[in-house]
Length: 181
Image (tube, rainbow, N blue to C red):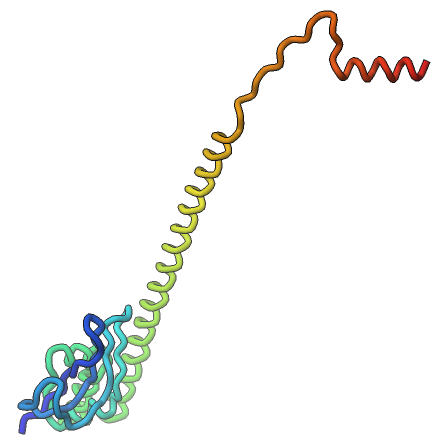
């Protein structure tokens, strides 16, 4: 019996999610499987890959063949590198301690790289939002200024006062002077 590690589709139309399963190669894609070892959600950025690395490693060591997509996921998470190191231990090329040390160092480096990508995507998204808000604020201020100019009447110059008439300010000063005298 040929055993495959593959994806089984679930989720609604145009919003697919997948289970990572170990199944007989003759079984249908979404049909019977031996064991579910994780999930994969391609709709997030970066894609969410959650699976039990120990189970995947055990099945790989037993001879289960991953499909191309699952092989990429296993490689991304280091299961295939761990298999490579374990085969070196079995052949006697390296010791188990050295293999574990190399895998741990690789895993830390890979996790740092993944976290850097997540933070850069988050900060880029925040920067895009801030720049869009600033552009929107500029447009809003420009519109408000245009509306203010449109609603403000043009200044009309007052006609020059006739020579014999006095203005209001002059009249008040004259009345205060007469009251004081």
